[in-house]
Amino acid sequence: MRQFLAVVAFTLLTIGFFAGYSNFGIPQIEPAPPPKEEKLDLSSMTMDQFIALGERLFNGKGTCTLCHNALGRAPMLGTIADAVPKRLKDPRYTGEAGDIEEYLIESLVEPSVFVVAGFGKKGTNDTESPMPDVSGGSIGLSEAEVAAVVAYLQDSGGAEVTVEIPQDIDEEGDDEEEGEAREAVNDPKKLMAMFTCDACHMINGVGGDVGPNLSKIGANRDRAYLRRAILDPNAEIATGFEADMMPADMGEQIYVKELEVLVDYLAGLK
Ligand code: HEC
Ligand code: HEC
Image (cartoon, rainbow, N blue to C red; front, side, top):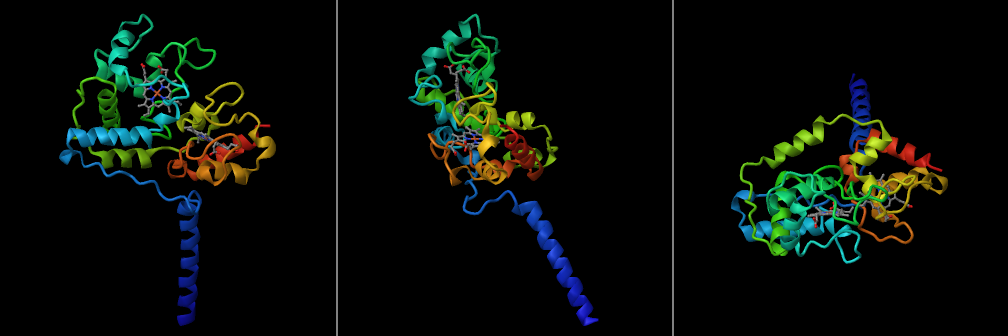
C-alpha cells in the first residue's frame, strides 16, 4: 500500500510538473528579467511626479523615442503648443478634439485621425499613420499612463498642463480583464496587427521600417530562431539594427498557441 501511494504521488507530481511547464514554462526564456511594472499610486502623486512618470513612459514602455527622435522618422514634439492649433484648423483634420489635451490623447490612441504631412504610411497619401495605437497591442499603455504621457507632452511642448491626475481608475482590475478574458487568435495577420509587429516590420510592401523586413525571413531562419527573436529580442540582434528596440515583453502577452501561429507564418515566408 505504501509503495502504491508513493507511486501515485510520484505520478501526480510528474504530471503536475509537466502541466505547469507547458502552461507557464514555454514563453519565458531564461535570462530576460520580467519588466518592472511601475506601481501606480495615483492618489498620492503630485503633478510633477505625474509628469515625470509620463517622461519615463515616453522613453521606456511607450517606445515613443523609437520614432520620435532626431532621425526624423516622426515629427518632434517639443513645439506641440504651437503646432496643435494649426492641426485643428487643417482641412485634413478629421478628429473631434477641441483643445491641445484632447488632440494629444487622440494622437496617441487614434493616430490616423490626423497624419502630419509627409509622415503617412508609404502609398497612403498621408491618410494612414505608421504610428500604432499606443493603448493597444504590444505597447498597451493604460488610460492613466496615456494621461501621464499627455501631461509630459504638454509640459515639454510649451503648453499649459491641463491633464488631471486620474483618481478613480482601478488599474489592476483593468489589467486582469484584458489579461484573462481574451480569446486566442489564430490568424497570423491579425496577430501581427494586434501586437503591432507591422508598425515596425514590413512584409511584402506593407508595414513600417523600424525593424528588419520580414518578407523572406523563413528562407534562412529556422523556427527556434524566430521563436527566440520574438520572446527574447536581445538574444541576437539582426545585422544593421540595435538592441532594445523591439519590445521585450511579447512573451508575457502572447499565448503559446499564438506564438506558434506566428512562428509558422514567419517560417513560411520565403
Ligand atoms: C512606429 C513609430 C512611432 C511610435 C512608436 C510612436 N509614434 Fe507618434 N507619430 C509617429 C509618426 C510617423 C507621426 C506623424 C504621423 C501622424 O500624424 O500620425 C506621429 C505623430 C504623433 C503625434 C502628433 C504630432 C503632431 O505634430 O501632430 C503625437 C502627439 C505623437 N505621435 C506622440 C507619440 C507618443 C507619446 C508615443 C509613445 C507613447 C508615440 N508617438 C509613438 C510615429 C510613431
Ligand atoms: C517597436 C518596433 C518593433 C515591434 C513592435 C516589433 N519588432 Fe520585431 N524587431 C524590431 C527591431 C528593431 C528588430 C531588430 C533588432 C533585434 O534583432 O532585436 C526586430 C527583430 C525581429 C526579428 C528578427 C529578424 C531578423 O532578421 O533576424 C523578428 C523575427 C521579429 N522582430 C518579429 C517580430 C514580431 C513577430 C513582432 C510582433 C509580435 C515584432 N517583431 C514586433 C522592432 C520591432
